[in-house]
Each structure stands twice: as C-alpha cells, then as structure tokens.
Image (cartoon, rainbow, N blue to C red; front, side, top):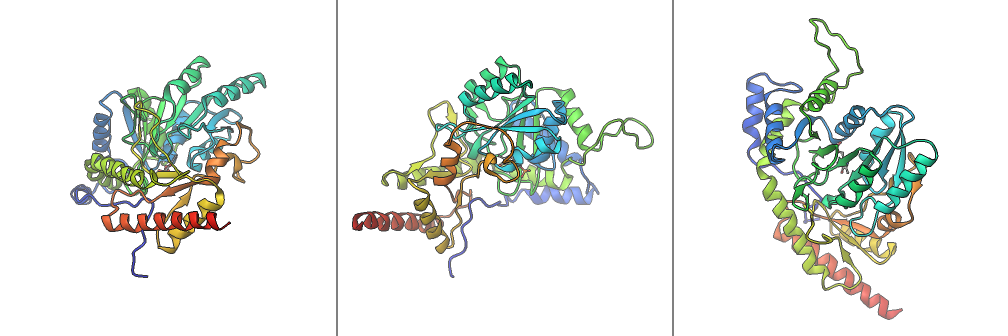
Amino acid sequence: MNNNRIYLSLSQESGFEQKYIQKALKTNWITSGGPNVDEFENVLESYFENENYIAASNSGTSAIHLALILLGVKAGDEVICQSMTFSASANPILYQNAYPIFVDSERDTWNICPKNLEIAIKDRIKKGKKPKAIIAVHLYGMPYKVDEVHAIADRYEIPIIEDSAEALGSSYKGKKCGSFGVFGVLSFNGNKIITTSSGGALITNSKEIKEKAIFFATQSKDIASHYQHSEIGYNYRMSNICAGIGLGQIKILEKNINLRRDNHLFYDNIFKHIKNVQLFDNLNDDFFSNYWLNTILLETKKEREGLRLAFEEANIESRPLWKPMHLQPVFKKYPYYGHKIAEELFEKGLCLPSGSNLTNKDKSRIKEVIVNFFKRNIKLKNEN
Ligand SMILES: *Cc1c(COP(=O)(O)O)cnc(C)c1O
C-alpha cells in the first residue's frame, strides 16, 4: 500500500525538546525529578494563571492514584466514577482496594450524568456509606457539566477528582479544565494533545498538598540521614528527561489546540451534509473543547462498523468510543447507576483521526472514505 497509515492521534516533535534534553544529559540530571521537572511545573502553573499548584508525575494514572491517597481513600471506601471513560480513570480505585461505583453519561456532553450522580450518592448513603470521592472526566476534551456536577458534590460534601487527561486547553465558562476539582489530573501520554512520552500532573490549590504529593511520589522519605519511611511510598515522580520533552512541547500547546479545532471544522464541513450522523460538538458557548479527538455518532452499530472497516481498508485508523467501565469484565461486578446512554454511545460512536499533524492530503483521503461510504450506504438503503 502506498498510502501511509493515518492515526487517531500521534505525538509530534516541536523542535524545542532537544535543548532541554541535552541540558539534562550534560548536567547529569538523568534522574527522576530535577530542574526540568521544577521548571515544567512552573510553566504549567503559569498556564493555570498561578491559581493552582502542580506536581508532575510519571503518568496521569499515577496522578489519579495520588489524588485518591491524598483524599484518604482506603480499603472498602466507595468512589464514584464516570463509566464512559478510559480504564485509567477507574483502575486506581482498585489499587487502593476501594470500591468503584459507576455512573452513566448524559447526552449533551457524554460525561457524568448529574441526575444519575445524585441518585447514586443518595442510594449509597442509604445503603450505609457516603462515597469518599467522585471521579468526573472531560471526555475527548469536552467539559462535563461543571456547574451541575459540582453543585451536587458540594451539597453532599464529596470531593471531585477532575480527570482532565484529555482536556488540557479546554475550558468551561472561560475557566480552564483541571482547575475545578479538589484535584485535577493531566496526562502527557504519547497520544495526548502534548506529550512528555509518558507523564502526568496533579493539580491542587494548596502548596502543602503539592509537597505532600511529591513526598508520596518520591518514596515517602522522612527527613533523616538514612532512608526512613513512616508511610507507604510510590515511585511516581516525573523523570527529568521527560520534563525536558514537556518544556519543548508546551510551546506548541496553543498551536496544537488550534490545529485540533481546525480538524473539527474540517469534519463539521463534511458531516453537515450527511443526514443522521452527529458530530460531537460544544453544547453552547459555556463549553470550549480542545477537540482532542473528533467523534461521531452513527445510526446503528452496523453502520459504525461499516465506516470503521472502510477507513481500515484505506489504511486510516478509527476506533469505537471508550467501552464503558460497567461493561468491562474487570469491573462488571460493581454497582452501576444509569440507563443505556453510555452503552449506546459505545455501540454507535466512532473516534476519527484528529492529530495535530493531519496534512491536507490526509484530510482528502479521510474525506474520500466518508463521502464514498455514505454514497454507497444511501444507495444500499434505496435498493432494499
Ligand atoms: C490518558 C488518560 C488517562 C491516563 O493517563 P496516562 O498518562 O496514560 O496514565 C486517564 N484518564 C483518561 C480519561 C485518559 O484519557
């Protein structure tokens, strides 16, 4: 095949990384933690208008785990989690031997449904345990209904961990995603809007909590000349080399957001001419998605699969939406509150190539597949 594969979301060099990596190597800061990590945290904090404190970690997953530890989540505690998400949102609940409670999505943002969230909280309290935390996710970069969800959490005094792994650069009512929760979480995994190859960050509003997060992330070393530990430690700190990549990458964050939003316009121009296909879009001006991934909802699972295979035939990657956690074998036995919205999204939804580096040629190839598929499909419908 002549055509190179087009991926959903591919990492991309900015050209600024080498300088920071070289410096780390030359100064023998080939370590976990170090000057690049401190600087990366500073740059991130200024990106968040210096209203938050940020601790860099070796992944988004470890940042979620640290948030649960810092909230005092222990074995047997219950933690509510949006079901429609990547498994990394939920796995750390099990690392703590806590008990996940899954909640359905709503149709507008595909994120945690406020109504079912409140039903779940009330029912868990009635059954004897108030949930210790709520993990809400800005899926594919789309902010969840922040006002509604936080009003409920505040009413029951339950802290929110805001999984903003896919939503760096998104905002709600002009405020950046990641800054609403008691904890916010970012990911710099290779497929995210900017990358450190592997990395993450924990966002908090307290300097002491940031320091405590770094303490846990660097093996919980007490102050002593020997290694002394009074608490369980973790090896979760970001590497100084990775932070160097992050310092180069953050320079192209705004550019990447604009490119991803251009991709959204590209898809909008195609799908506005196709009936019964819904391109996932901002609900209103309160919502500003970075459009990390562009996603569509088709009429049936069969149609979804048809389009996916048509892309595959043209060497273009596309993928069904996240399979909800309550349907995953590893999480099946845990309670679920809601109906079938997340399930329906999983059946009929498709993620489309959305990388910041899509070329015009890539876009023509993508458009050709979509247009031909729907031409053919409409014809098939007429023949039946
Ligand atoms: C990527 C991602 C994570 C985890 O981040 P890693 O850095 O890969 O550990 C968590 N939640 C969501 C929703 C993600 O997409």
